[in-house]
Length: 143
Image 1 (spheres, rainbow, N blue to C red):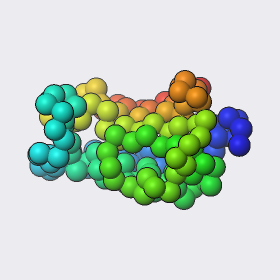
Image 2 (image 1 turned 30 degrees about the vertical axis):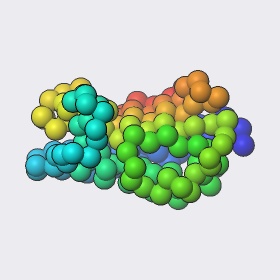
Image 3 (image 1 turned 90 degrees about the vertical axis):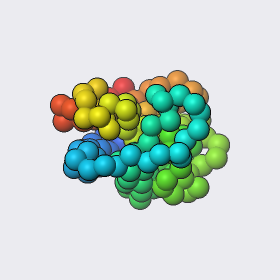
Image 4 (image 1 turned 120 degrees about the vertical axis):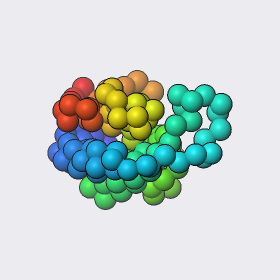
């Protein structure tokens, strides 16, 4: 597996999936979707959790699992515990780092500055990213 193959696969498969997951998250924003007591770090910035976090991660992990077998050869570091995380490699020079709703507090309050974020790292260094700005409905991806 080479970096170019992975970035090509991400470019092909992820933009549509991330936009779709963003649409689901935006729709969920209109409901009381807060989940209390699941995270216990003591920081309100990192302990915020919504049903949208769990749902978006489930959608993205499922897409990564099924869209291209290359993705399952990567390690996955996901902020939440949802999704078929065990289907990904436990060791690899490539890691997919996923934050389903980056800025959960802002998201839950209906404020701007929240996004769906996925990064591809090679030996710990970010080399490619997909970010969907939920407020502006704008997708940015590339290396």
